[in-house]
Amino acid sequence: MSEPTAGELRHAAAVLTPFVRRFDLPLNPEDMDLLAYAVLLHARSDRTPDEIAADVERLIDEHVEAARQLYKAMPDPPPRD
Image (cartoon, rainbow, N blue to C red; front, top):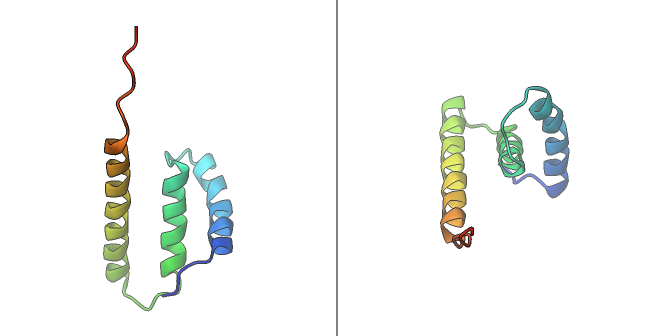
């Protein structure tokens, strides 16, 4: 498995954007980028579908944990008057 190039990722995001909009999928740009990355990374994989699914589950878990850590690191907003 080779890493997708920046150009491939841009093209994949361009392909996915109409689907996300048309089907009103609740994806933020970071989630869509992760989806594009996972599809491109595994598109030519010789791994089994079960192995790919397990790899992608781990990738999602890492993405969610990184977002959670980023959220925790944010300072609390100032109190409202």
